[in-house]
Amino acid sequence: MVHHVHDYGYKRLFSNVTIFRQLLETFVPEPWVKDLDFSTAETVDHSFIAADYKATESDLIYRIQLKGQQVLIYTLLEFQSSVDKFISVRILNYITSLYLAMIKSGQITGNLPPVYPILLYNGDPRWTAPEQIADTIDHHELLGEFGIGFKYLKIIENEYAAEDLLNIQNIVSTLFLAENHYQLEALGEELMHLFEKEDRIAVSLFLNWFKMLAVDGRIDATDYRAFEKIYTSKTEVKQMFVNAISEKDKRLIAEGEAKGEAKGERNALRRTAQQMKADGMPLDVIRKYTGLSLQELQKL
Image 1: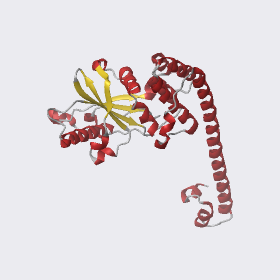
Image 2 (image 1 turned 90 degrees about the vertical axis):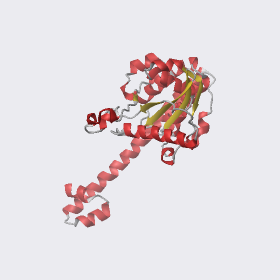
Image 3 (image 1 turned 135 degrees about the horizontal axis):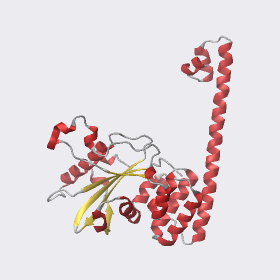
Image 4 (image 1 turned 45 degrees about the vertical axis):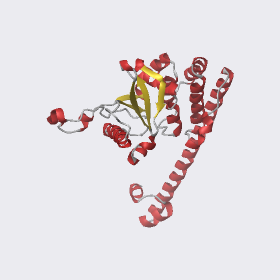
């Protein structure tokens, strides 16, 4: 439904422990996930991290207990319209910055805690970036044991088929379905199913996110109050869905009309430029009065 949503709303969703737990339990194929104590899960405040690290807005760090030991789970929410070949370098830099900040703060008395790196990508282009940093370094094999051994786990939303997501039936799978497979009937059924079985606060967060994205196409940090609505009945959820889709269609139609008007104006300028060019007027003069580039005028 909505692509490249690099906004407050997406991060707000995964800051909910129930939704984050579903991400890990459903899409992280590691045996230790079942041993995580999610009752201890909390997001880490970035305020103690180095200045260059704080500039990162699209990441989450969770602190959680695993068999009595603290582990950190770092998740980078990637919304770029193009694939970053060196994303592994970025993620490693974030993690080492986190470690250095922890050391500098004096909170480390023994060894550093393990940090598990996850990349969550919701863009359209196929993900082609290497998962291992070694694959971005020429002749890395020459370094032998002194090479950099680092790899992140990728969760690429557009790689999951609609049928597989429909079989999972949780908030995260429905999120992936909404963003990558525009199947209104199936999506409406999934929302109703979620309302009946999921944690009311978590599912309300998701429903509010869905409504705002459908109607406005984006979510600003200033819209935080819009997440607070709690849905109390299936009728309310159904009405929200119908209204949201209706408003989305109106928005898309308006956007399409605006693009059509802009294209019409552009074509009119091109016709005017062609006539001016046929009348022998200099290209610089035509450019001044039409705003078209010299390259475009030369092609007319």
